[in-house]
Image 1 (cartoon, rainbow, N blue to C red):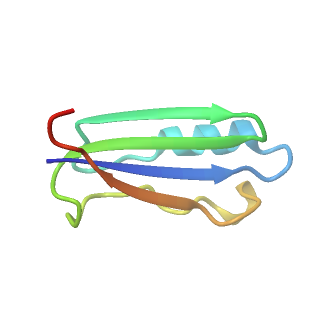
Image 2: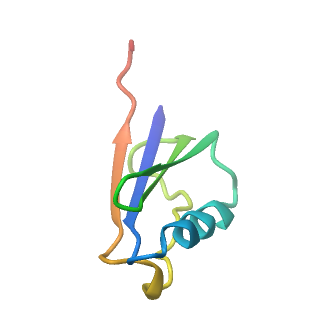
Length: 85
């Protein structure tokens, strides 16, 4: 089964590049099958990781960034792949 974890944060004013650099530098051990990092207007950063694991699996997740880098708490979502897609 494929598990996808989504992690999204909004940077504090003027901290977009620093938040992006921080997110990209965070190691995950063990490494996921795939990891992608995105940015969007409003200095938002999104990281999606894919795992070969069930929905409830205990897999590494990105931590909360330093409070000075964000304007609100991190949002996290967990999704499982749909068979036959």
